[in-house]
Image (spheres, rainbow, N blue to C red):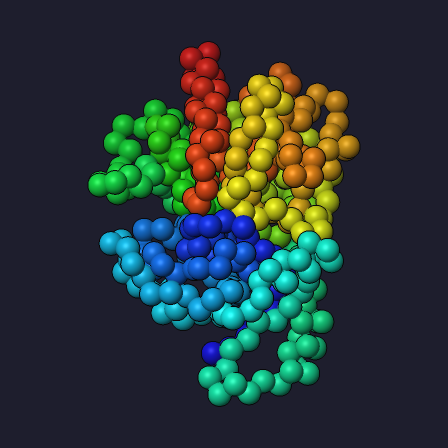
Length: 363
């Protein structure tokens, strides 16, 4: 019971609804699933993507074509409906999600209120006024709302059958992760390449990061307007770039790296949300199918000299990757850890590890 306001986006992924709804990048958003049958694998504690307790809310609401089905999976510990109630996420079922998706494609992502009342009675005028009053994501710094309040360390691998998540017992690298809303599987993907992760708040200074003597720095994913978060984060990122430390950015971290290097960002009409987006690697010509979740992008026309566009969306030509020439610094708009999604881009973590290894060898 209750109501929540936010921006409505659609997600085209056919799997991973629990990972989607717990991705901190969806803070202040209501997710409409284009896949009609949701709920069949239930929910569990292992597939939650939030890493910081502050990011526990993640998505504010969910919209389904059909009522979520009962779970039929050996890993399920709860059904989706009960799981949503425990997380205070409002869900609506029975909507024409095709019509909603078409509206978003043609008119952009609307601000809305999603509400539930057991007796079916609503104050529609009050809900309309609430939706109209919500300011939207433009200019909104949400990283501060979802970031960790204190430093913590993670050294674990991706989930694998039959052992699940395992500990990284002899880390080869120390990576400082700036938490703008980091997904748990980004930390695990770093663990897979031998890294121990030290997670710092979004507001950490460059001096705080470098005090840990990291082999590399990861700028994480997260929600909100990158220009708003970049107001305090971009100057610190610029200092980290100048330090010569290998840097990898993902999603919001990618956008803020762009800002730190002198580029600008822009709001997208409908954004990219799904696990089936084609992205071209300009260096190899290879097309990867990737996982996406963003409503802002770097304006490629504003990339300064020395900053190279490495990846591009084949849906709309928007920027999906950059690298700084002559420095061990790169970032991508898409999610190489996926979760959910294909594993075409896992090699990017190996590229990051190679940069860290080269730096350590030269030291």
